[in-house]
Image 1 (cartoon, rainbow, N blue to C red):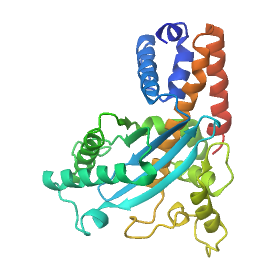
Image 2 (cartoon, one colour; image 1 turned 60 degrees about the vertical axis):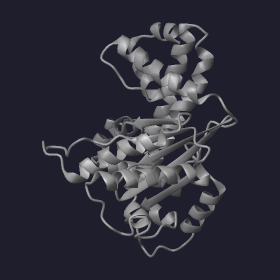
Image 3 (cartoon, rainbow, N blue to C red; image 1 turned 180 degrees about the vertical axis):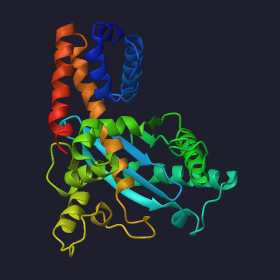
Image 4 (cartoon, rainbow, N blue to C red; image 1 turned 90 degrees about the vertical axis):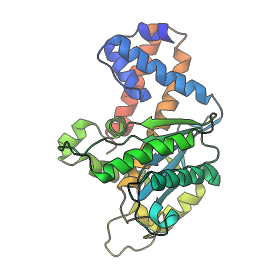
Length: 307
């Protein structure tokens, strides 16, 4: 692998890192190292016929989870689980979480146990937890909600990795966002990334964009029922489409559901890219470069231009 990567030019390495979800780098050696690290992660998942990515949009009140399945006989992943929970309602009898070790530790343990015992998530190959920012943008002060989120993220990671056979990673929201919403798209539309991401997922789920994602039969039935139910002028809602309810499932908004799904789907795409790329690793530099260029063009056509 290292030898094959060393033969690539800087631009090809940059594209490959992007297509695999690897971190970038200022020089060739850094890029090669980051790609190799991502490849090692995918290798640990094995090459089973079914690989499942479960992504968690961490929160101390609202927590969203999405699970996407890659099957060897198709390049289009399947959304098999998608839900949101109000943690204070479910685990704390409606009481607000305080910034106290005994409370956050207990809550994180309860959430980790819940995630690993939910039947639909038991076959998860890789759990991803959205990496949280460490302070509010534009301020040097760190507020209590930001502290709670970071503590929750770290404790949840620790809880999930207690089983040494379970693979868990911290998922960079910036990397996920750049994959689905290129900067050029924000500039062209004048819309914020969050708005574009929500609109994108609504298009995938409520529209007709089966090139990127298929739905599990149960989810497909729920979505179909929602689409055929009069909404009296209300804006299409993923929360409503999943038949979620306030306050048990949190507030009626779609951004956390959106990010959980897009993290899981991004990892599924990155994994599928690597599985396809493996066939080129023993070939020539030209073959590998051609694969990268072709896959990047495919991303531009099916993702970057889809929104």
